Image (cartoon, rainbow, N blue to C red; front, side):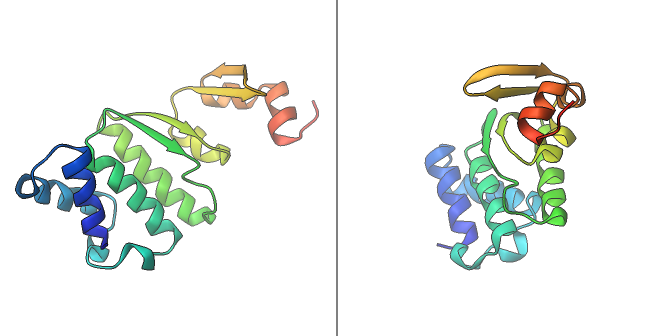
Length: 147
């Protein structure tokens, strides 16, 4: 399927819209995610950053109030990561709540209001991102930095 068709399926089946009313919604999503120029390309032909954008676009097509993200910055270059973080920031600014699992810590710190750090399934630290990341135990476990 094309990039547009992927978002259209999400908007109609996941978002409950009829195709006629879904089309302008999908076009707005493609524009906001930077995929408009790739709307007619086959999704399988996209590079990694654009596939990540398409993941977000499909999710947005369902018109979520809560967006679950899992390692969306993983595998991206520093510049690509900055682009995806900016996009996530714009989605957040539109009022979409997020639960984001991520190991690219600087991406989380740039967008998140609150971090919850888990270690072996147990909460290890929670709160404002910069404060949590300055916790010596978090630095030891996640960053390998001994205090």
